[in-house]
Image 1 (cartoon, rainbow, N blue to C red):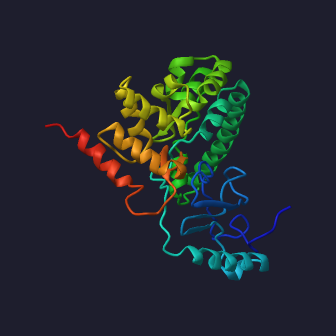
Image 2: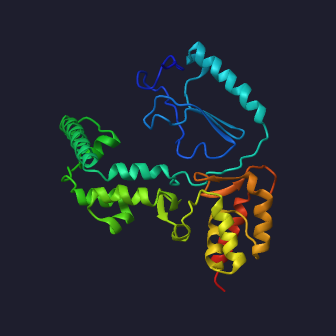
Image 3: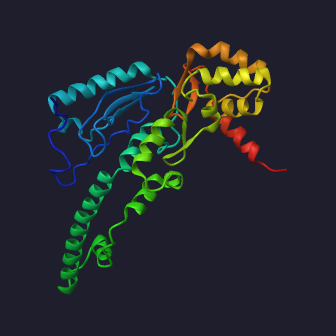
Length: 308
């Protein structure tokens, strides 16, 4: 069952604007965000067409109210009334990296590591090549007739079909650095991702790597126990360097002693939550100024990179 928001759309009317959904991966992993509704889109079924993050409301439909159904007009009015309750409320978890990898990316990596997906991509490439060759033929005909060509048509004149990619090249493209570990064994990828699911750490452009510090402790990096056990390592002097790396990697704060870390943890442990989209961090469910200071971490990182 679906309800229609707009009376017109870009696929049917020339010049009609298209809407925008938000990527769903990690959208709900902070207490100040809520997913309200999906919508028909070119992305996944759970992409966010309507949602809220703190005092920001995402309304993904492009039509003005004049081009909305009665139901769409009502929901838009409700959305405006609803978000007004959050005026002035700050954001807790901040997604500074638009393409930051979350654990959801592991599902796609497993999907890409199959022979079936490879063959399906080859078929898509073949269909794409057919459309490009037709476009090139049309562009050549226009040029022969002396007609002016658009920028895209000019580019099509130089189109050269590419040979089908091998399964090896396909795996190298999608698995990137993990290909060096696993190679051409598709079954081994699923086992690798499943076995290390709790220990992956994401940053950069869809980049995941295994946190060997966390893996050595056999505790998921999203489990609050990892902070507690890291502080214990420092307190007992067993491996303070590992403790410091873990605490620095998964929090925004920085303390010089294990005693200070323990005091911070005991104070806020009931309010701590883990966010992947927000930077693979444990944050405090509070908007009190200074408690979740992303800038302080960036300043420390910049300072540590300075060489005397």
